[in-house]
Image 1 (cartoon, helix red, strand yellow):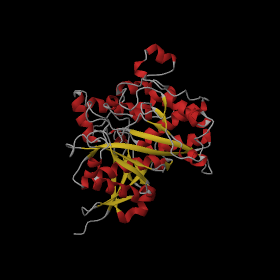
Image 2 (cartoon, one colour):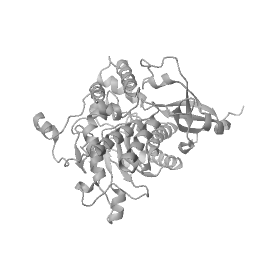
Image 3 (cartoon, one colour):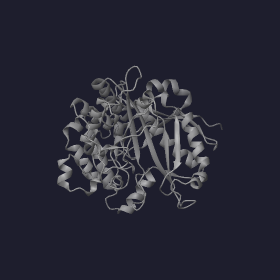
Image 4 (cartoon, helix red, strand yellow):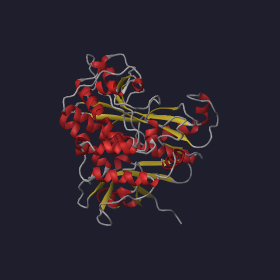
Length: 436
């Protein structure tokens, strides 16, 4: 019997998991208009496949409509072609659903255009690890360890390019079996789409070569974590860059300064959406090169928000390369939701007329609490429970999202926390390693 080719219509949900439904490839034109059926309560499925208390119950119907601009076809020689598309969740009338993560991001990007007249150019930089014992030990940034996975690396970069991304670099990172993969920036929603597709393709390439990849925030608290760094810059309608000003502090334009100030002001309130697992907070601690305070850094990898270096020399190229980097994120987060939270915080800074503070140049963990408070620094939440409380306590941050998002998100995460409540840290790390 000849197999029937199928296309998987997918959404990246509140848990950062890619779920959906497949349909015969011959129905594509119909499905691009009518989608496939979806259920509101699906939004309550957490990363461990538990279902939290749902406001929808068994009621309601939705559509998951695939977007051909996100199409991926990948054949890794196993005799099966992977074929899928990300899509939007809508009502039966085609209206965006309030809990569709792609629609949530579009709303944030529309706000950025309204308040600043610019478009976002973004890229997600990922770290992941291969499970199992390292083939060679003591190989932080090592050539030998890279060569062990050259085939995987080259296959992954080819798959990313075929999926419409611009491969930038891949390397053996510092941690055991840890790698970092970087793609070039994309405009708007496509930046988050690319992050989802990169994760899926990485897992598929690894599986095809007898490996298993995990993007878990941290496998072992005695070792390194796996972060996601979100790079952002701004473009005017004519495509000219709007991020850089040679006379601005750290090279930031007034727009970039206000946006950055908003991100820093509301960072403690959005980290529940950008680092949303129970073990994310084992990584967001001082001296892990991650993020622990709401500080701006100038080429400082301990800062939550970093002004990145440029390698260009001429002014026009510098302006195009100049970008800022949000570092308090990991791959337990849905990229669309994480980017939406950051963009909303930045827009709030623009609307409030804020100015970015001076970058820090010291170890903030050594400062007494009263000095931190006097300088406007806040220690980021040390647990998911605390992060959720800080999101819920901020009416401004909650107001960026349409009802019933704030309540649904909290219930979703509470169900996730309940499922691991009896586990110690090591067991929690193992559980997240298996799911991400």
